[in-house]
Image (cartoon, rainbow, N blue to C red):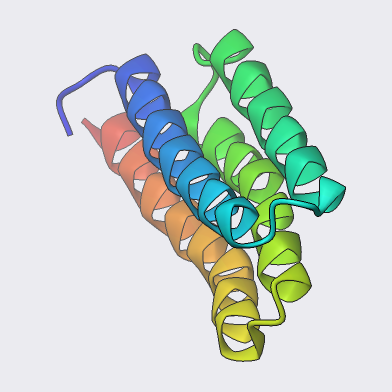
Length: 115
């Protein structure tokens, strides 16, 4: 990981945001009358904008917060779409992925301070 933390933050925000918006828009296409999917999309866009405003912070601090802000409306949209299996799978990702990301970034920060 030779890239600067800001680059990793921008990559993470882009990947999380794109995946979340794609899932929400897919559900909205199937349920065009539901306003809740539009609200989930707005919350996701706000989380992406917040992440882009704070992209210079440490990845260990920023990425789990951005991920939680983006993943929460996605999980809500899975639940609204009556997709039970997808809801529980998304909920497990919402819990475990930030933990794994924090551990990985913590070891990277520690290895960086050792050198």
